[in-house]
Length: 625
Ligand SMILES: Nc1ncnc2c1ncn2[C@@H]1O[C@H](COP(=O)(O)OP(=O)(O)OP(=O)(O)O)[C@@H](O)[C@H]1O
Image (cartoon, rainbow, N blue to C red; front, side, top):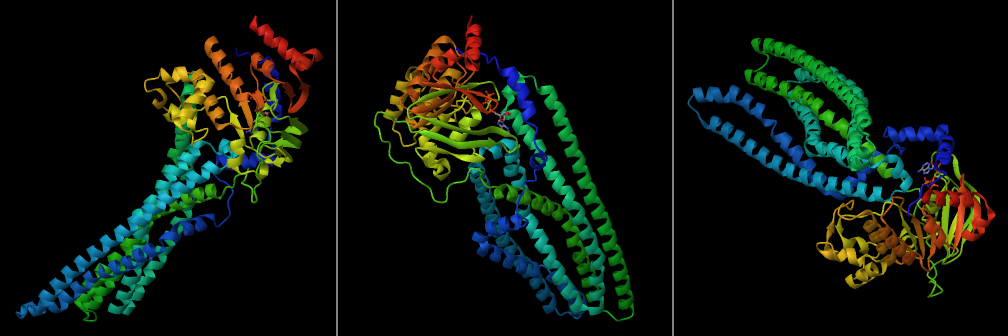
């Protein structure tokens, strides 16, 4: 039977008082909401270097292919110049050799350019896709290893955004964008050298026009950096809102959050639209100003060349080649505007990904781990737990658990009760090492939890939360998560012991029934049974149980209670109790208020003390009548 918590309202008031974060904590929270995680200055560069390192050979090969391809593709205007100055007079004199040579040269350069281009695109695509796959794996693995407090602040929506839109921005740059940027630089070098070779005063003048053009590019880069950064944050906010709303659609609809959600989404969406408008404006300004500069430059140079051709100071062929080269010289940098868009987006995205990857778990793996000694008693699976001078504060700054000492005897079931916000879950999470104490230490069989590897700790301590998670896969796979090497007999045996065998056999494919993530095809009680079977299979020394509050019907309630007793039997257990029936099966009760243990004793002792626990007990009993 699930009972209302009569102290809830009082606790809620206290929460709002104690929750006020201090200034530095608030500043840290702001960084999170703006997607600005603290990271070393060169985090992006270091990440890029580490991503490229395994592919350096292919990167060098791709670079060489592009260098050759761009060189070959600059031959066209020279062939045109040769055709005008030499082929036409030869044809007029009925000599067709030079014409054939030019046609052959043109064809050869076109084929060679195509071959090198294809080879380059292949190498680029391979490197790009491998690099993106590597990056996605790193984000996934790293995010999984980060501690709970990070995820609570960063949210799954932001993580999704890093792995989708930010990775896409990098993909855009790596597949096509980089080619355009490096290609533009190569074209500028080749064309400038060729112009200097054809006519050095003109070459110098053409390069001089590049000066103002460079200034427009620089100005664009400066403005674009800020605006693309904001745009990426605004896009991430849209993705995050989508992800968070639709992964929590059930509570959203239950609590009728649609209207307030619409309002906040509209705000986010308007900001997104405004920033996109700003970025289009920055781009538009760059395109117009750079085109103006380039076209004025070309007009002046063409006029100068025309005068020199008229004065027999420049060959007609050279004039034609120069006009063609001038277009190329300024066209590529102009195109750069579009590519720089992709470049700036990718830089902003890389920065965010690098900052995410630079985060360190707040509960790190030990450098020199210790192991737990084998369990001493075969009858008693439990291990002793000691909270030694422990105090704890969340990142928000205020102390939630003031300094305390607590010893849990092996095999003892301890129920923790108290108002909402009293610190029950926090105490449990310290024992499961989701957080490290800000002061003191938590010892399991005399070993500080900080010195146990995550694998060893998770083997010894299992925390069952209210959600009773069901993952996508079969029922058998879900139970086997407790001990992945368990065979089907062992799985069926624990399910039988827990009392889940009957309902599982009634499912369409029994243990092989595929249950959707979120457990839509199993009831709340059945979900709890599966979670308890999983815990029993894991056979931990310490069980932490955050008892589920939703009420179950009587038969299910009895089944779950029986399953709980089975799992708790002989182990050290800390149960956050929401049910009167659970408190009665406990050997010991801890009554918490404002982060302190205010009463500690057997249920009978505490009832006789007529203190807060006795009041809570009476309120529970009253709610039953
Ligand atoms: N992740 C967190 N970040 C910041 N403060 C937190 C966090 N989790 C809990 N708190 C605060 O710590 C205090 C203790 O919370 P805790 O969840 O341990 O209480 P509880 O007794 O388990 O409450 P309930 O019965 O409602 O689960 C509360 O003031 C709560 O607001």
